[in-house]
Image 1: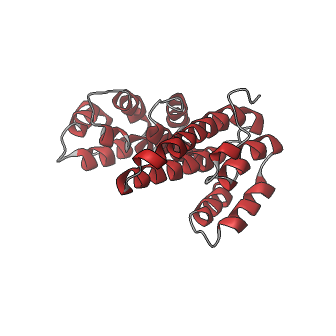
Image 2 (image 1 turned 135 degrees about the vertical axis):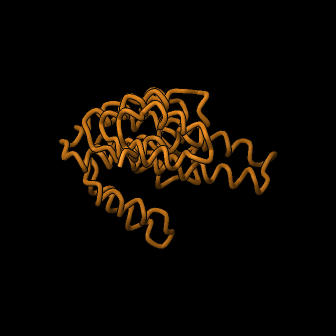
Image 3 (image 1 turned 60 degrees about the vertical axis):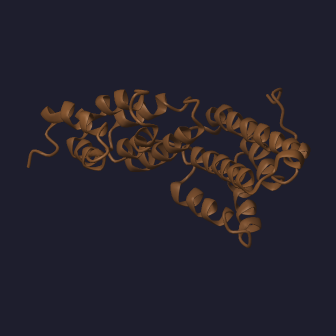
Length: 219
């Protein structure tokens, strides 16, 4: 009935702030369709909305297949929260596929991939230096999660330029130690040279960050 009625958008957004109604509110926003996009964008940028809820909103936008959803998500690609960027990239890849948008040229993807590679290298080097003095099981697990998320951010960004199915298959295989070498080989064959030289060394040399030929000066 009136669950997705755009006239109820203020109530839907208000419900996002209530832990008991957040899931229903997101479903209602999706049902409202494109008229809800601007309201979701505003909520996505509201620091008063719990981060856990904001992290779900890119997925909400990805289920409203409209160019406005894509444009709003693209605006959030520079979010300083790396976990939010992961959610945004994943949503953009799904939307690009759903909307049938043309692949992003590799040259336009390079600066975004470089940003993620540099951040990942910095985290890996910091952990390598800190590990001998400060390692605990909890810290090791936290850095492992951070490393895996960095890898996923890079792969989700690739969905902007490459077929969603191909990238998803490689991403799944990368998580399996037995299949990782084959996944890296497939990725090497898939990538444009400018992307390959940024991504493959990082994914191959995760245990030896000091050997990575990446610096802030990479053009």
